[in-house]
Length: 568
Ligand SMILES: Cc1cc2nc3c(=O)[nH]c(=O)nc-3n(C[C@H](O)[C@H](O)[C@H](O)COP(=O)(O)OP(=O)(O)OC[C@H]3O[C@@H](n4cnc5c(N)ncnc54)[C@H](O)[C@@H]3O)c2cc1C
Image 1: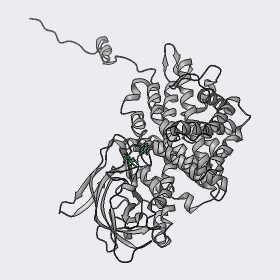
Image 2: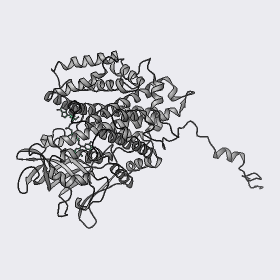
Image 3: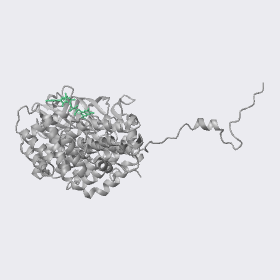
């Protein structure tokens, strides 16, 4: 039978029509380009304004350079890699020696290096003064948008300094290495290092919020008391960043719960018997390791007064709570950047998404939440820069638990809603949104969960009523600028007059404290469209609970334009 061979090309070598048709099924259109190679600082109008307003204009150039680094495609990939490759843990080496070693992906180490070289753990202590905390907070805000999980040891190292200073002879030994702007990841004694990192270990199995239930005990090696050596026996249920060189640890002595500085190595170069049992299997905060530990006579030195462990470590905790605010506000900003970028470059039903009224309402609402969180956070940073001023000290005392509670708690739903703006692609693991979403509850839970922050707010008010006066004095600076704000403030002040059921009502009161302060800051210093939409949606009840509930008359177009990153 005649069976001629089929020709697949024409006389010029080009594929015949049917092959061309089969290989080119469609053209990819209406898909945004990846959000990369943009300057996270220069493209963030609200951040630039807040940095100037709160006294850190001197940092502008540095922040701009850092923002360019943070937006590079290679930098963004570091964050992806650090999260895609979970840390792993080995108790022993192959010869049977106990090593307690966590291995991280090189991207984690690179991010740690950048954070420490940029002084995110040190700058307000090494260069205090006007704008120091504000400048650091702004840089942390940029850095944490690249990858939030590794910021945990950075925060703890930064936050440990005020607590360790309670024991000056220990501070003399440790402070210089803590404040060195270098990263040394080696699993070797601190005596062989020029730079160290510090962690914290409070939480035990039987009690986390209520650390008074701690059962870990401390036995004096010789003399008892502040600065003296003890051996600790017990366990800790959550210890993040277990490769830190030393930890602030709470343990019981005969005179109550006390604070100790516990290095991972003894002065003779042997391993301190602080043994990691296993790593936590976390849903978020994946690039950072968290562990369970048993303590078998580990050598540690008492920090601060015996029996006053909580007031000693609380100075560290206050700082970490502040960083939770920065981290959650940063998560919101990255979510806003992703959502606005996507909707600006995607059309549906014949129009760009960010031009469609309903999507405009959602996007603008997300932006307002982020701007309010940022304004609040950097105002607290300024208060931290001015702790010798009574008003600022009182304000920081109360604004920290209020802000930690409110901003961290507003973040998970914000992340989810931004994910939905991106549609199905927002759910995919090669998009940053799943990571932002999984990270979002963590800040709300650690360093004192929501209820604990509310109770701390009440405790501060009851112990030092001037804190509430300072809070309201600051908020009232906006009085007379907006009728809705005035009514909201007056009602809140009225509700504080009645202290019955104080604990039961604490969330409601703290919610409204946060809203009052955010409203005040936006009205006084914020963009006028953002401030107006904030008052219309948050300070007067229009019935809606979800994002996308801005009432008519607000100006979403201007708000969205202000927040949408422009990619070159
Ligand atoms: C990823 C991760 C890393 C962590 N890393 C560390 C670490 O490095 N070091 C460390 O020490 N800890 C760490 N923790 C522990 C964390 O700080 C605690 O989980 C947290 O403080 C809550 O303690 P808990 O888990 O024992 O919960 P509980 O104390 O049992 O609290 C459970 C709930 O009850 C609420 N509650 C408690 N008391 C009251 C009350 N009186 N009235 C009303 N409600 C109340 C709390 O707000 C919380 O919602 C980490 C936690 C996580 C998730």
